[in-house]
Amino acid sequence: MQIIRFADLCAQGLARGKRVFIRADLNVPFDDHGRISEDTRIRASVPAIQMALDAGAAVMVTSHLGRPTEGAFKPEDSLAPVAKRLAELLGREVPLVADWVGGVSVAAGQVVMLENCRVNVGEKKNSEALAKQMAALCDIYVNDAFGTAHRAEGTTYGIAQFASVACAGPLLSAEIDAISKALAAPKRPLAAIVAGSKVSTKLTILQALARNVDQLIVGGGIANTFMLAAGLKIGKSLAEPDLVGEAKAVIEAMKARDAEVPIPTDVVCAKTFSADAVATVKPATEVADDDLILDIGPDTAARLATQLKAAGTIVWNGPMGVFEFTAFENGTKVVAHAIATSSAFSIAGGGDTLAAIAKYGIEKDIGYISTGGGAFLEVLEGKTLPAFEILMKRAQA
Image (tube, rainbow, N blue to C red; front, side, top):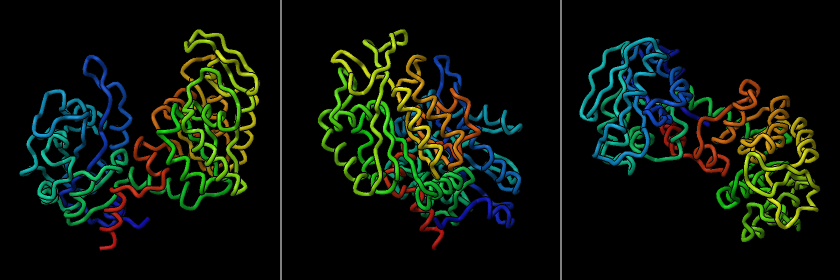
């Protein structure tokens, strides 16, 4: 993917004294007391900002936070807590600037945070007038927000059209490189794990991957629907019977390519959905009418682990079962450790996947952990993300 990289501009001394506008993804969660409860995205934004400061640029950083109403700023929409945390991480003051579209005062070697960009009228609809105003604020536009790369908004697309230079920050560049390595030119066999509660939310992903991967491993409620498609009973487990036909089509598409969708041969069942429910391992052919399937069984997990350890590339999105409950975490745990110990290049994304990676302490053993949820899923679908599209166009200009 041909793009201009901010790291290259800095290395060539082209950012010195320039006004640099960085679109980061600082949309972090807060607890009931209004405190940041998890700061991964803020920490991930630091390299691009530090790179710009080290290069002698005048740095502006902005992000969306939550779902504010355009033109109607409220205190809870403010990036103030984020600016405070960023200041701690950078070891320097990070002033917060409100009403910044008309102009920003920042000196070379300084950094300011521009208040919640989604409060600006026209941001979500990618207003050309707004985009031109924002582009006028800077000499170099840097997109470092993969989490919003699937949205064509003012600060993710429009400004990149009109800025003198539009490039990718280190975080976005790393995402592009990892995605290209995993999907554009993967080392075979290519295994993809797609799990979650519903086939309907990931049907297009399953269909797209069925045309490319060597193994398509399904988990969670999605696996239950595929079990139905394979003629197995699933009791009262979460599934989508109306999508059995689509699941069968995915299975057949894989077979036509001498590839497979491994169907569980054993499962872990319970009578109720609760952390203290009694877990029972059963052959997949012996699920009772009142059973809930809450995890894949140990034999299935071991078989998948063997396949994953032999893979060349692994794409992982979603846990194999209800891993939040100790009695039903084995499938996810075994698969997670298999990915961690495999020699394959692995890329993982999605909230539940990141939670599983954190739970099992394998962060350092995953080839690349994607910071984007919806953006990561759209890439798996084979879509060209708007932010990628405009950066590629600008690189060719």
